[in-house]
Length: 147
Image 1: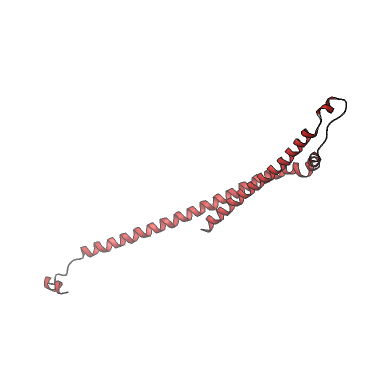
Image 2 (image 1 turned 135 degrees about the vertical axis):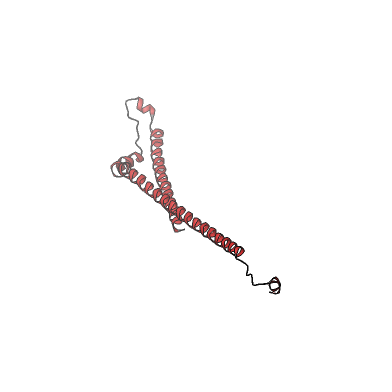
């Protein structure tokens, strides 16, 4: 039973890790998307076509540029592989303990069935012995009835 609980715990932890990672990824992508929307909606295309520069850089782009070396690249080159390894280890552990639980459960079931079969065979052998037991020739039929 403890193996089954440990298996479920590891699987739930792996799922929680995946859900947390997806949440962080979606929140970062939505922040990046807001920066692009701000950029395209605030830039004046008529100023761009003339000699003046009509680009307005939103503050989200500045945060992306400042986070590139400190957050984004380490997350891509170190965080993603570590996340995948951690998820793999958690799922392997979960499967291992689940398989161990199933094996132990199967062993106990087989042991119980063998014990039941052994008991039935012993009972049957006892009843066969009693049937084959020679009757006492000294005993008279009248004495059997009185007993």
